[in-house]
Length: 241
Ligand code: PGA
Image (cartoon, rainbow, N blue to C red; front, side):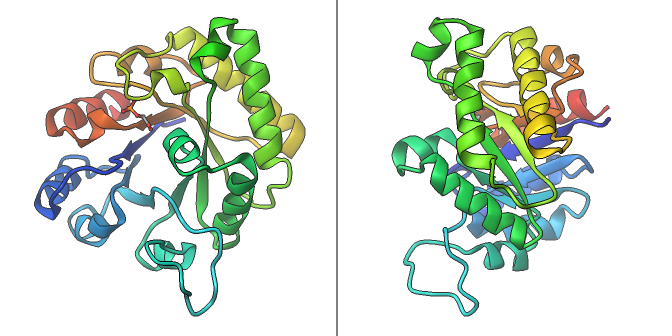
């Protein structure tokens, strides 16, 4: 199976011009751009082969929109050409109090709009220090709380150990692959679905090849490095060629 390369730009780049330049570099089938939503339409115009997603949606989706200053709805994301929505990213969990029950609501809302949620899970450093089995137990608790009531067809899970996000400290490819296998087995058993699992956490042009060799890792959710033109170009080449 071809691997998926998901570029989570977070709050970068700071101009539409730079966003369009990145769109041209990564314009390949198998690439999903998740830029700041302000830049999505402009990027789409120049990147017809890539797909798009948004980094977040609001927990409600009233037909005519509503009074939720600063938020975007899943209907708006869809109308702008997004196919995916990142749900439960660790930064949103930590900075915006997104609990597993919020993740559950959003995932179903996204699925109801026929978009695919990319649900992020991952353990904190204290948990991982106790070993991979403790990390698995923690991830299982997140999956159960967020996804046992999932009613959508398509679903992607991103395993992003919190201690590896934006720290330059990545997981070992073998451990990440073992976790990916664990998540897939859970999804098969609990949801009766084959769920692709992405790895994220300090992925860059130097380490992506080692992760890409792991057959249980179905792709990547890349933050910081994905908004760097050179890094983006190399990573996309490594993953998709
Ligand atoms: P990072 O972030 O690649 O900057 O570590 C990954 C993510 O948060 O999705």
